[in-house]
Length: 145
Image (cartoon, rainbow, N blue to C red):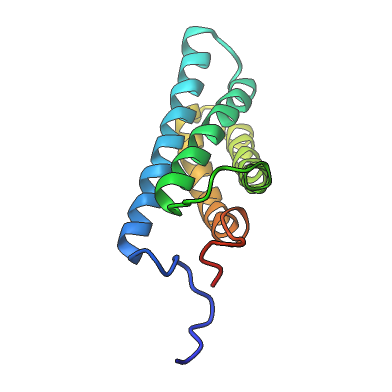
């Protein structure tokens, strides 16, 4: 069989199912992020840049659970090394996400925080997928191609 090069989806999953699971899992994490951001800024009058740090942390936990279960269908029990790999990828993507969020708000202070959140999340999404596919959920006993 010819070498397929980089395989962007796990061999055990249909690419459409995998892509849909990535979008749904990311959507749940995004919903947690947006809900916490909106709640903290609107109800508790927390500055958006501070509120976003809390929102990111909670969204990260939701994302890990969703991606491990649905996107990558990991069957091995959760482990600390896996969580640490995921956290490293998630924090890197979140750092990019947060940096873009801040730049948008500083460049145009009248931008609604949720608009800045959407734009920054789109930028970070590609980085997050690549990191999850080839680092966080890539290891012994998993689809490593």
